[in-house]
Image (tube, rainbow over the protein chains, first blue to last red):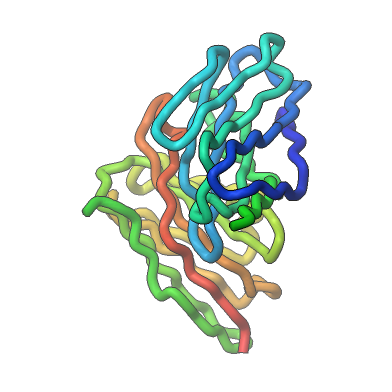
Length: 113
Length: 114
């Protein structure tokens, strides 16, 4: 399985943008890049995903490097509710038996009021 | 509201006892999953089911069992063979095809050993 590397922790001030990096140098051409986040004592929730192009949704933006070996999750204006562990995950598509999402230890984001 | 319901929220197990964690979904999803999370760690897949009456072992299936008799339900039994069951257990579901990667999670069950 292709692996991802994320910083263990990051801090950001409230109401400022946050850029969460993820390295995935062994990504294959069919791997989708997913981001989930997990608030304290809750299950993870889907944030965003992409394949090659940058993606935007109501929660965040995903910037994917041209060579796809890294990506950045962008929270445009962090709030205290964004404090969570953020997971960057590669998913290889719908090949038989390849339904797993492999969660690493993620990046713990702390928002400073 | 559609979603995943896990119960109980907290569960205590005695030595040698089997316990069953409940997971129900009303999202009409075909696929369901069970994960285990230890403190400060990511999630590890225990079992998953792509369709009713079918399930596959994940990465850490030993000491656990599941059933999938109904589309809506995917209970997990932690057997006495699981020697270190204390963890946070999460259930998830997803739609078929490319949406398989968009998993919806329940709020979790925290299991402790007495």
